[in-house]
Image 1 (cartoon, rainbow, N blue to C red):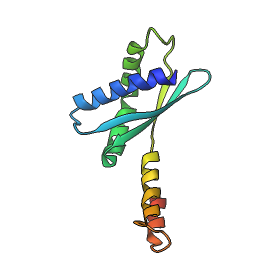
Image 2 (cartoon, helix red, strand yellow; image 1 turned 120 degrees about the vertical axis):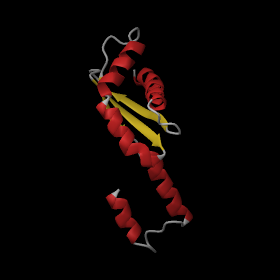
Image 3 (cartoon, rainbow, N blue to C red; image 1 turned 90 degrees about the vertical axis):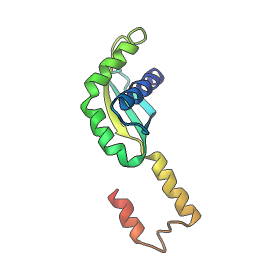
Image 4 (cartoon, rainbow, N blue to C red; image 1 turned 90 degrees about the horizontal axis):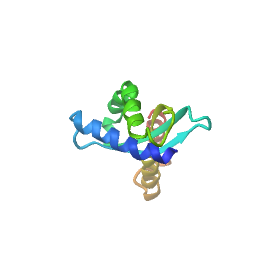
Length: 122
């Protein structure tokens, strides 16, 4: 179920971003979790570049009914009922990048305690 939604969501979101004039933005759907009763689908998005993610997420959340309608049209032969969509930013790649920098010694929180304050705020 999540796989069907994931594949079609990528096409819908990337197409909408391209038509909306946001060239050079990559949107990938990293995970879709559907509840047992199929009423809610939690969609985790990875957006590159990271600085455009908050504005893009705001636009996606405000257009959720339109996205849900487009998705329902694409999956009408596979799904009887379209779940409500909830969008979240997947920051796992950023987290992995922070760990990698720490391991390489580029950002060492022991030597520079200000890094910890910076990470807590974000």
